Amino acid sequence: MASKSSGHRTEQQIRGQAGEDAALAYLLEQGLHLLARNFLCKAGEIDLIMRDHASLVFVEVRRRAKSAYGGAAASITPAKQRKLILAAQFYLLRYRMPPACRFDVVAIDGAQLHWLKDAISA
Image (cartoon, rainbow, N blue to C red; front, side, top):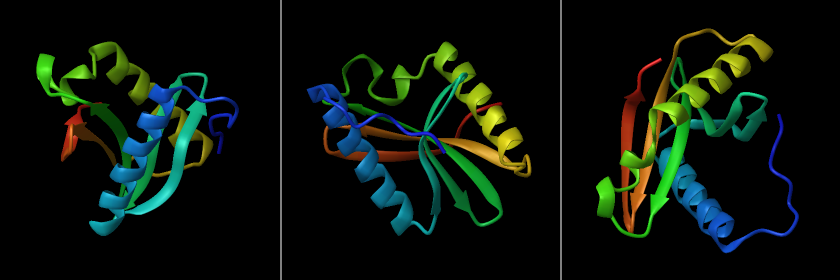
């Protein structure tokens, strides 16, 4: 499992990490189990990889201070969705995981956290 380097981090990276921490805590409370965090490959990055019963769940975490312009969930462009799907395919092949999976989004707008199951179609 690859992860981000721990060198000098920008304020945006620190806020992003805090958003991932909040999303992870919430998903753990919901009964999911963490398999990997910040998985990096040539295709891109996956914020959280979790197991929900028999399903593998690839989670994109998005955080916005305000919900203007559609909010956090709307910031996941079709190009970002394609990169997530490619990175997930890479993960499935590398770790020989069964293809039963879904793509969830945890959107954080200000203090509001929204868990969107099956938000991205592969």
